[in-house]
Image (cartoon, rainbow, N blue to C red):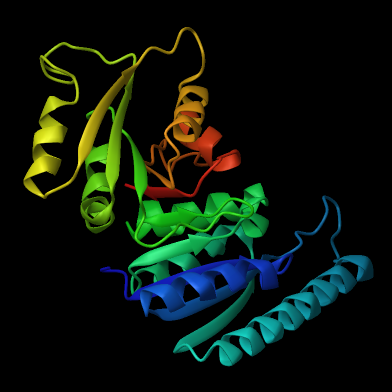
Length: 276
């Protein structure tokens, strides 16, 4: 595998569970584990100027919880015998994406467990810093799921957009070593300026040249949301991993993700590798 430096971003809540899975993955990849333990600072309430004592007490309590979580994470990392480094940040939301960006630049893969991923505020900033800013792939691990190595069955969500192409390139080592790769197109547009005359044929040929055992699945949505079709098909084919591109809007407003990306980040039956 080409992933030699993993960045695990964990929140104060559930840090031990999330880091345990990151340690397991780093051990199996024989990789260096870089750990970022984070929490978002409590903003002062409207009209809390001068700042009240209650707000300050909340911040102190949060910082103590963060340090306690980080200390426990460090103990687990030391016990694992893995090479690792650890940083901790109690920061304003406006700065968290940049904190993640600075660390993700020097990693091959960013890992987020289900405990951290359950906090929508944290997940938004982590994806922003890692995927959009540092342009590093992010692996989201749902509860009780850590990908087998090598990954046996992969579902690639394909729509002929640049983001999907980047995700495939980032995952090419995984795809090459997989037993089967299903490139999935939902309600594909067969016009040449979208997917070509035969939707999926060109990406299949590209992957075949890399020795990937690829199958093209063209699926009708039947009026269902695309994310529901992808989830169901992942379960049907026994996928160990979903690979997909990340889609977002302008930085001039709070970033949200394209509907399918956002929905799969909220609920996914298997790990998702996200890239842009």
